[in-house]
Length: 326
Ligand code: SAM
Ligand code: DTB
Ligand code: SF4
Figure 1 (cartoon, rainbow, N blue to C red):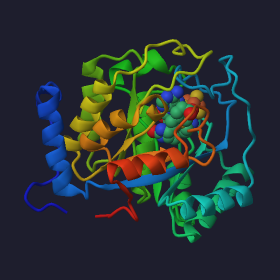
Figure 2: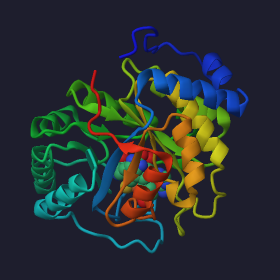
Figure 3: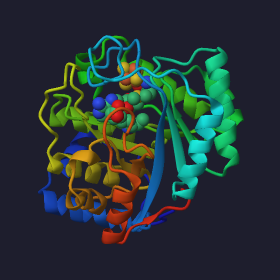
């Protein structure tokens, strides 16, 4: 904990704008300075991501290859068995991950056998001594509590974009639904992982507005994933332009400055980034990445374990052993 400067939850749009709009190198320098006041800058949290249920989702998120209504090449895969998932988590731990995130292509959690199986997975992964995370769609307060009791450490639920832009990309749920689930997760005492995606056609103001929502929550999300749109053929955004590196750097740096204690994760987009480009993101304050055994994120490519090992060595980075919790 940095005692000199408190964590602020009263940021204004004007203040965020004056940080975000700075000349890039000045912004990166400031972010790198804040990063060093709050974190060990050479430690990067490695979070293994596993898609435990893939595709066939009823939502219409226009960026997502797993939405059933778009014609993509993605193969639908039923919910994995708890044994399979737990042995994957074991291998992730051996390979240096400290967090294991299980993702399901669901709109929301239902109180059925599948949820019981998820709870079994959470228990098993928790017993391995890993920080267990899930991202399963919307949750009620009661479901969040059941997950917490099973040993869930964190829940990923992204805002994705600004409130104003939200309905341009998703019509089957609202921004308010997202906030409601985040509230339910918070009430259950689970750590929050929430961020968004760049490259959906949003403006810089939308990006800042999303950061404002995150940074003015009563407590900042403990992790903030910043994703670049992973373009999936067949989705409405499949042929959108690639997100510029400097846009990712600007977003990461601003997030680092306004949410200094949070883990900022360089999430989707790494497959299309050179090592030197990723290094800019780490310099700007990113201190977490997603990895996976399969070399895919959920359904799109991601650097493999070996490639990341080489990058860590080249940049002098070390996998974070465990997140320091306030
Ligand atoms: N179905 C649940 C939900 O939407 O909350 C959990 C899984 S969903 C794949 C988790 C997050 O992945 C989404 O909220 C979104 O931020 C991100 N995501 C999905 N597709 C993406 C893409 N093509 N590019 C970048 N991020 C993406
Ligand atoms: C997050 O912020 N990014 C991850 C995770 N949370 C679950 C997912 C990114 C998905 C990228 C596209 C895909 O592979 O489906
Ligand atoms: Fe479904 Fe999640 Fe993809 Fe939206 S982002 S379509 S809710 S899997």
